[in-house]
Length: 350
Image (cartoon, rainbow, N blue to C red; front, side, top):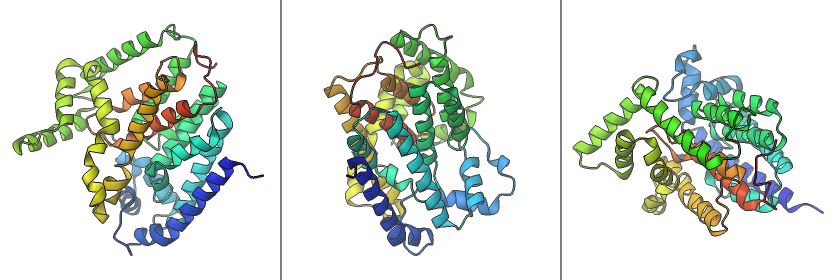
C-alpha cells in the first residue's frame, strides 16, 4: 500500500517534469517569453562573464553561491541544474518528514501549494538551498546535534548573510549559556532591543550601501508624490527604532502582496514571477497566520513559532526586501499547524 505522502511527492515530481519539458526548458533557452524565475539569468550571465567570483561578495546581495554552482554545473546546462535542485529538494523533504511528527500529507500539500516551492525546482535560485538549510536546522532542533547546524551554516553561505546570522542566533538560543532559555518573551524583547541598537550602529557603515540605495528610491518616490506604506514604516523605524516598527513591518512583508491582486488577472509574461508566483505567497501567508491564531497555536512556548519570529526579526532589518526572503517563515508555520501533537512547551528539545 502506497503511503499518501509518497503519492503526493510522486505527483509533484511528475508535474515538475511535465512543466520543465513543456515550458521551463524552452523558457530558459529563450524560445518562450515567460518568466517563472527571479535572478537566474543574472547568475548565468555572471557565471559566463566573471572570472574572480570573490568580487561579487557584498552585504547588499550575495551572488557568489549561485554563481559558483552555475559555473560548476554549467551556465547553459539547464536540465542538469533542474535535476540538481530537484535532488536537493527531495533530500530536504525526506529529512523533514523523518524528523517531524506532523500529518505528512497535510504538511506536504501546504508546502507544495506555495508557488515559490515549485518555481525553485528549476532555474538556479537561492530558495531551494534555503529549503535544505532549514531542513538541517530542523534536524538540529529535533536531535540537538550541532553537526547539523554546521552543515546549515555552510549552506547558508550560498543563500544570504541574514540566514547565517539567523543560524548563529539559533545556536546561541539553544546554548546552555542562554540563561533566558525559558523566559522567551523577555528573550525576544531583549533581542529586538539588541537588533535596534545594532541597526542604529551599523546603519551608515556595514549596511550603508543597502540604505543608500533605498533612500535614493524614497527621494524618487517622494518627488512623484508616491511614498508608500513601507516607506512610512521605514520612517517610523528610523525615528523610533526597529522595536516599534517590527510588527507592522513584518505584517506588510508577509501579506502586503495581497493588495496586488489586479496583477494576477492581467499578468505580464515577462513579470510572471513577480505578478503571479510571488503574489500567492501573500494569501498563503495570510491563511497560515489566520489558522495559527484561530487554533490558538501562537505561543512562544512553541519552538517553531519562536524560531519563525527570530527569523523574521533578522530578515526584516533591511529596507530592501522581497516576500520570497520570508519563505522559511511559511515552513515553520506549516510545521506548527500540521503537528500531530504539541511538543513539550516548557523548553526546547535538547
